[in-house]
Image 1 (tube, rainbow, N blue to C red):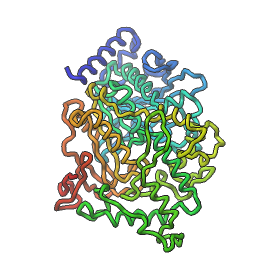
Image 2: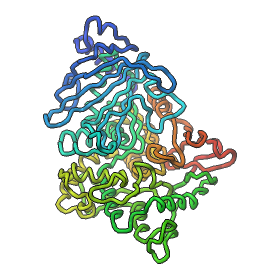
Image 3: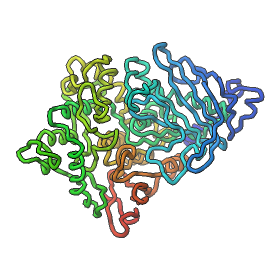
Image 4: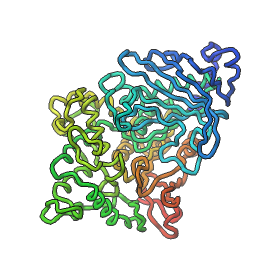
Length: 550
């Protein structure tokens, strides 16, 4: 019997057990439920027992359950929308707010969405998976039951989206978010509600997320290897604290007088890199398909004498800043997680600093941190104030990641919570789990080099053949963080169908093709890392004209 079959049998047994003990409800309302039609009315006000969650809570309650009709992907979809709260152990900690969408005509599958940034809001359950296909229905329109939570805290509506770190002053809220505890609590509560609504358990359960959600995807695969049958992790900020230390270092570098490259200089850098490296893959299409072969020297843009003489060149201070942003950052002290560095960002091989909101901003970092500074700079400021020092008045530029002084012990402690992804996915693989890992080669917020490092660690630990049996990793040339702004290549691929087929039939993704909806739906082969697509001959907008190579 396969691992997936075992999971299904266990889930069915649990559903039957719950039904006979009355936890699923009884009477006329419960009788209306079926394997495909949810009993929405029967969910209203339902208590969620603490016993159904494997991690400590004080239970939960459905706050609302309403019949809903939406047009999704051009289809009219009827579903029951459920909002629920999960209650903390610490009375001072916030609730976990979660939602579940239960479609009519349920396909007996469930999908959990991850969040982004500091989370704080429930993701849109009617949305697509990261890099999802624009020409295919979203999961809810495919009749997946979808669910997610805010990870255990609620963002201040006045704060920039996903950039409110104030919850970090509470240990339970911090652990819910940073260690991923809210993920398992939400998953367990959602399965209880799904079983109650349909009187049946899901046959398959998947997780999909990008950025923080990508980190969350790797957390659930590692910490709870039997909780999900398959996982999609896109541009994952898996070594969260390590990246934060690099961002803090860059905040200090970019705050120096004259070091911050203004938007015109950011444009100069990006266009110069693309001009130098675009045709290394055999075709000039504004996509750098072979970033490892791109070695742009920013000194070629140096202003005469190294002074800032205008937007047509870079000063010495700006060249130093760009070089620091594009280089590994290493800290000269040990932390408990064992991490020693963050590999830097691909600004000298195709990433664009100008991406709206997620880029490096239009103004230099300062105290207080401007909302026009880079997303990562604002993330660092929130982390310093509420995770590290727990002092809202602390100047984030006063903490030097190279020499943190009195904060070293706290950094080390936080590393055990935020950098828990140690790449040991052997239990997940043994349980039959499948993982699709994706990253854009031009990501300006989470380094693709970091994900490549994670993949190499998994491969080193498990071996090449065992890794290939459950994991595929793809780096998408020209694609940036979450298809933000106007990327050179806006990646679109039906990873959910590929994952579902792999889990259910054992067929791994074969010759996948990724599309770019922003440029006439041009296509490229989706090459398994470390391969990249080289132009061979024919239509440069067709995947068939490229071959995956090293």
